[in-house]
Image (cartoon, rainbow, N blue to C red):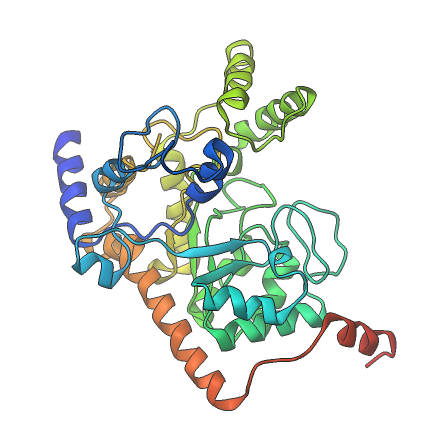
Length: 358
C-alpha cells in the first residue's frame, strides 16, 4: 500500500495534468473588504497568508489552472460570477450588460429572496421561480451565462431545471443527505443532473458540510452581530472577534475527509460526470483542516485516491466536467440566439399577467 506521502505526490502529479477549476472563490469580495480594491495594498503576487486564502503562489501550489487558453499560456484564469440575481435589479438589459463585461455565471439568489426567486436561507415568497424568474433563466441561456443554483431554495432548483435549456452549475454546494443544511443539494435534484448535463461543485465551508459545525456557527454569527459586524465579514477586526469566541467555545473541525464524504455521496447519486469543486475560499471565516487555503487541494485529491478514485475520475472532478459545462452552455447560447433576439420583457409585464391569471 502506498504511503500518505506517495498519495500526495500522486495527487500533485494528477493536478499538473488536470488542474482544479474551482467554481467559487470570493477573492474580489475579500479585496473589497480588506483594502477597498487598492491592489497596491494587497497584491496577490506576494505572500498574503494571514490576510487572504488566495495568492498566486498558493494557487500554483494547489494545482489551480483554469481555463484552457490561459493554461496554455502558463497563466491562471478565473470565471467572473455575479453572486445573486439582485445584481441585475430586475433588468434583463443589465443581465446582458454583465455578460458583455465578462460575467459568465450568475447565482440566482444570495442569502435572501429577490423579486423573482426564493433563496435557501429566507422565508419562501415565490414558491421557487416566478414567471419573470423563468424568463431570467431563458435569457441567461441565450446569452451563454451559466445558471448557478447555489444559495437558492430547493423549489428554485427544481423550477430552474424545468426551465433551462443549458446545463446548470452549483458553484459551491454540497450534499443535503450528508449534512442537512438548506444551502446543500437534495438527492432528487442531484439525480436530475445527468439529464441536464450540469455539475454540482462541493464546497468546503464547515457550517455547510459538518453537522456539528452548524449550531456552533449560528452562535458565532450571533456573536459577530452583537459586536456590530456582519456575520460574513473576514476583516482583521472580524477575525479577531471570531478567534476570541473560538477560544472560549471550541470549534468543530472539518477535514478533507468531511469533504470527501460529500463527494462520495454526490458521485453515487449524480454520477462522476456531474460533480466538481467549489471551495468558497475568501468567502468564509473558517476552512477545514488540511484545506486551509488554495494550496490545499492536493490533500483532498490524496484522500480521494485513498478511497479508490481513479486518475480518470479525478480529472473529471477537477477539470473536464467544468470545462464541458462551459462549452455546452456556449453551444446552447448559439442555438438560442439563432432562434430569438434579446428579451425585452419586464418584471412589471409578468406581474400584470399573473394578476390577470394568465
